Length: 467
Image 1 (cartoon, rainbow, N blue to C red):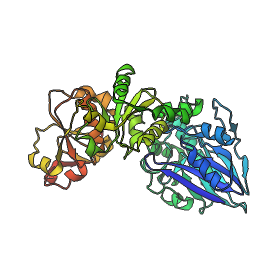
Image 2 (cartoon, helix red, strand yellow; image 1 turned 180 degrees about the vertical axis):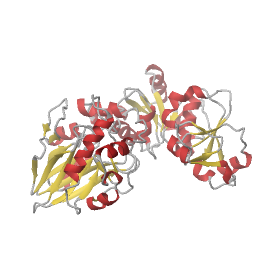
Image 3 (cartoon, rainbow, N blue to C red; image 1 turned 90 degrees about the vertical axis):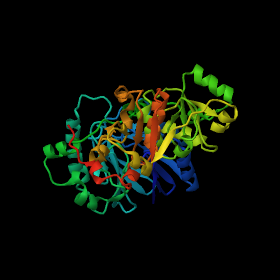
Image 4 (spheres, helix red, strand yellow; image 1 turned 60 degrees about the horizontal axis):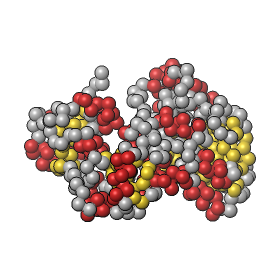
């Protein structure tokens, strides 16, 4: 028996590969399926099942393409109603894979179809649970992401309590927990940085598994939930209803466009131009009107948070060799309408004598020297980060909701902008610049470096109570 976790850091997402005696299973695959097919081929195995723990909201799964390529049966848990052929397993049903068994445990709560898969080894011993978004390390799945339902988040949290108490807690302490996500995912609140652990440890340390009444659990799990990214329900619908083949998405997105074709597509298709280069490179020169979202950070979640239309035509600028990665990451969160990229990238634009723009920057030390309460300082971190600690007088302007809050700013004013480390502030500055804000200065290094300057400690405000 082989069990392999395939973890994708930029999405904080875990897929799983299980192989036994020439048969394999993939659990919660990402959109691009070639890596899973290659693993099975290397093991001389046939992929028998593609197991889905639920209709994912934070990424588009590769279940449809993988099933078509491998002939594998797609499996969902009870109550799932996909718009395509799939096996809807019964609670307690056992699936044979080589010499091992996978038992279906219906664990509604995160969503009503949410299912945990219990892997039993060749001797029939409970070995591991693949919990999807039912149980994380240090947390449980938030109960407010289900596709439209008449149930409230409190109703779903009640189901989650019963699932954990009746299906998960009775299992042995030495059972391995393989969750669907780790720290950084918006599918929970308090996830650990570890990506797997033992159930016994979770029984001791996970706040949601401590002895408490259902009412107390519901209150604990629903308290402090922030609004989920806007693309989540749209991805869940794609996972339920179906989508364009990744191969077709990749073919279209990988079109190499001349400068003339790039400019024509920008105008004719009303496309959005995303510059995916490093932030330090972007600020020194970029195409006017383009938006920075760098590929070397949490690219896909920020695309999903900031671009409301999944069908938005997208053109992009990339470093040579990074083009396919850009298209792949866009597709992982359902942005399938990439039209192509500028051949030669920004250097080709610059060499043609086209207009370029730059973004002013200042390092944290120099900003601290000129800081005064009259400076317009935008803190684009999330409200929770701002409330934990911020600079006195800074205005919290979360990047997540920049479009919604744009009317709170004045185009005639000068703004300094910071986030935690510099990535989000450059995204925010690029969006503001594209919307006509000219007097912008990014604080390089962000809040982390501001804390290390000679700004008086009295300028840092901590633990503001949210109203």
